[in-house]
Image 1 (cartoon, rainbow, N blue to C red):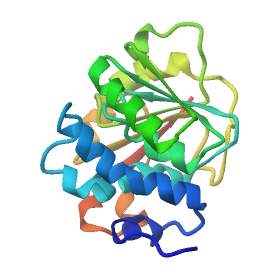
Image 2 (cartoon, rainbow, N blue to C red; image 1 turned 135 degrees about the horizontal axis):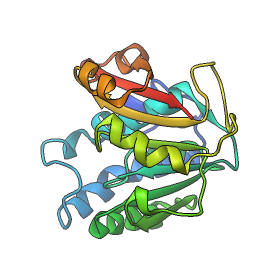
Image 3 (cartoon, helix red, strand yellow; image 1 turned 180 degrees about the vertical axis):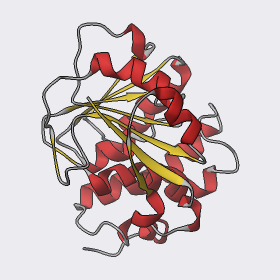
Length: 219
């Protein structure tokens, strides 16, 4: 692999098999988000200078535990400015990602970033997940959008019944995968689900990921 920009070392120290196209796409995200965030605020001001740690690597924690099968369909519920969907779309170029948000201006940023970075496997839809009809996905992904109870209510009707569309540990069957932080005991209790949890700090031992988790609920 050719030398990568210093700002990408945070990612390439954990993932070392990217193509040059993927490295290029990841490398564009910093300036693209800074440019668009000045127009439409989709990343908090305190986070914009830490986009690779707080947003890109955080999103890629999902890729560290699951290998989405080429051709599978993933819905990102409440995608905001495109996380975790856009980093995962770069990571899995053969997988289709459908990014959904109820705020149209956020999707404008998503579309502009994908266009500028040449990310071809992302579609967007200005809607609420609960209003989507006649479409089924292999997985739903989300990051800190809503309580787990709500995410399950929105996502489960959108998921295919059969297991599959991913390889890797038994931890992953088709279902909801979300990124959450803090003390989740009450939220999980109220959801009525029995999710599997993985501490992101075990995957990426960076202080930022202490108390952050990947939550998986199978269909």
